[in-house]
Image (cartoon, rainbow, N blue to C red):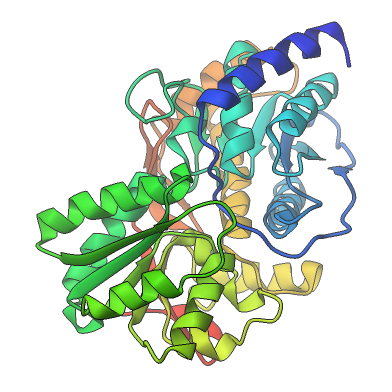
Length: 404
């Protein structure tokens, strides 16, 4: 590694130690995908870089993002306007690997970026994007630490790192508002969250605060940490407290274990999750019938009937052989939002990174974008997106829109 990247790696790791360990995505089966991907460059192409887990336990997320981004780049280029070239590196959902990937992308002349797929690597490399004035928009790094230097979403916004996904706080407040508006789902709420995970705890904190505002009764708060997989104590306590709705701001692997253990003990509350639960139907060895009736808040529903979604799902299935998840949809939207901004600002590949970054920030903070994951999306000066969440329910082994 070059001396420069040794220095920036140290900066990145320092930021990482103080930042979120959260990721907008959990664990899944390993993938044998290639460690990096670089598209064939059309003439005058603007170079997009990005990284995510293409191998290892979180590879399902990185590969979804890579596949959808490749699709979007191909489609944008075919239209004959702005031209993109994509280089995507494997960061294995690891902060040090993400810093190394950043160096590789800079050596490859990256001009704008998809940042990282997950939050821990995103928090580690965000200072590098600021230092090098590279505009970045993450499809799925939901922690405030991805866009704020303080890691809490209060002060020190990087200013050139944006999010396409909902932030963790918005997921918590949005879930409480939806549940309160649908009392048929349950009126006595229990929560089980991972208290050593900023992603899970961050969602819980805002869920609890919004629940108080909405008059939603939380009768039990249970926690776990690390790789705990026995939830019988928490489930028995929730049942004893009379909870008829169980809110799970966690990833789908522990969620699948909770559903299995609740079924074994005969406890059948309504289950409500957030974006980290997207993928529960693909957990190896999990009885997916137990997920019937599970609700989750998400910006994307693959079974939606609008033409944009139907075309995207059809093309993604043809390319990847599977139904796209929300991470794929967010990545697809990222590329199209980049294209809209580049076209509007007249950005060309011969501009400096500083000039491109300034123009991209100006466009993103003033434009409205319509995509797969929302209509009339806007961004504030801190890089936070505003869009309406959607609730989905699992029925007959598929994700379908829930009542609004």
